[in-house]
Amino acid sequence: MAAAIAVRSRHATARRRDGIDGRGGVVTQRIVDELAPEATSGLARALRALVVGTTHLVGLVEADGTIAYVSPSVSELLGHDPAALVGSPVLALLHPEDHAMARAMLERAGGGGRSGRSGLSWEDAEVPGEYRLRHADGRFVPFEVLRNDFVGEPSIEGILVIASSVVARRAFDAALTALAHDEDGVHALTKLAEYLEVRIPGTACTFALSDAEGTVVHGRVPTELLGPLDPDALLADGDPAYLDVASPGGPLPSLVRHRALELGFEACWCFPIPVARPRVYTPAGRNDSDHKKLGHMVVFSRQYGEPLPVHLGVLERVTGLADVVLRRRVTNRTLRHLVAHDEVTGVLNRKGFEGLSRERADEVAAIMLLDLDDFKTVNDSHGHPVGDQVLRVTAQRIQSILRPGDYLGRLGGDEFVLRVSRADIAEAVAVARRILGALEAPVMVEGTVVPVRASIGIAPFEPARSDRDLLARADAAMYAAKRAGKGQLRVWEG
Image 1 (tube, rainbow, N blue to C red):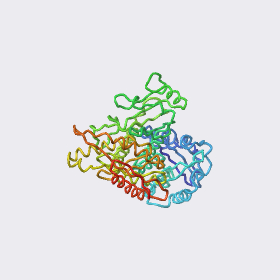
Image 2: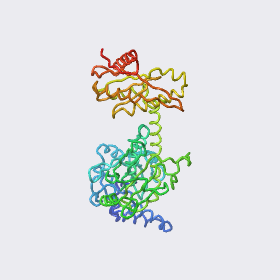
Image 3: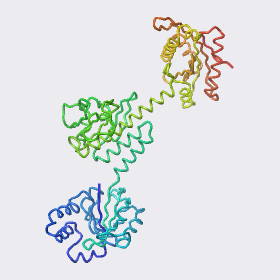
Image 4: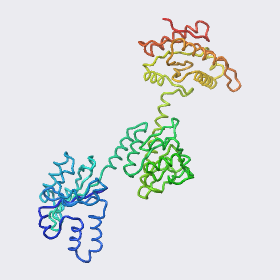
């Protein structure tokens, strides 16, 4: 939102004698009256809009820094009573750290910079600065300021300062920064939600992700509105839905409607991510054939009905950025899975197993090494495709035995490793016996019966030992099981 403050020069007193008393309407009318008659109608309306009727902040400040006039919009922008500000020092509206910059700007009035027509200092005007203006609640709101020196203009004789609030821009910058550096996307989506809530006041936004975890990333939407809400049920033919919260019989659950009304929300807007048929925003290079839905953006608004046209583009752009975040999230998770998992069996590979072991180094866990007996003959007799299928079935059977918190990895060939969490030696032995039982049945591969046996070595947990040490002990125990006749388990005894 833009604002403007005109800094009045030492001739303010003389202008008061001419009947201009610092009130915006009088100043506007006096300037309008002095204009050529043929320019009055259009310019008069423009001046009235600038000084009185605009949502910008318009003010006049004396050369000594005293506020002579401030427009009514200061109430909405900063929460102040405009009449109460007249006569007060302008520095009182600025953050203390910005006082030196403001004083320097006033001191240069009429004396610094390269002046052009009407005394305009183009160098000043072209160099924006940021000032923080004090809100009535004590916080400071940042504004970007353009300075224009009109001291050489007899009808103005001051500095015009035009400032734009940068709250929304900073929120957007924060979202882009998070998007650039957040591989998982949760932080980036949170920042996008915060930006949208700043850009469209009176809204609360959240993103619901369509992934295996069912993750929900919140903006400021209360959790009681999201729990019973099914975003898919809100959409018609995949297009965005604009729902009246007060309307009974619609797709919004009654619990959500009643709670939303209590919180002051009038509408619920639901967007698929991505939007298949955007009305305003079409990303460059978009492939219209690729509309795989990755999630939803749900926005509750205190505005009744559909979004304003000026806001619809913002909403669609945010869903476009969310689409980028979610696609990268899926890609990164896929890459991490490929790096950490065995492509044949789908269980952890050596790298993935060692990484997970480091993350859980403090847990009580026994290490178990399992080697398929005589597996080389399976590959030699039936070929590697049959051997790979035997490995897959073996991994599935082992995983069916494991408890929550246990995990399985394939070290290579026919060798598997298990980390049995929260287990003393008796519990680890019980798990190993269940695995041997699950592998007793032969594996059927395309009509071929392939018997499967395994030898298992177990290394009991010792706090002073790393998983690498325990794995070496389990390996020694596994070879002891093979020497004892295979298809057995052994516990390392030192």
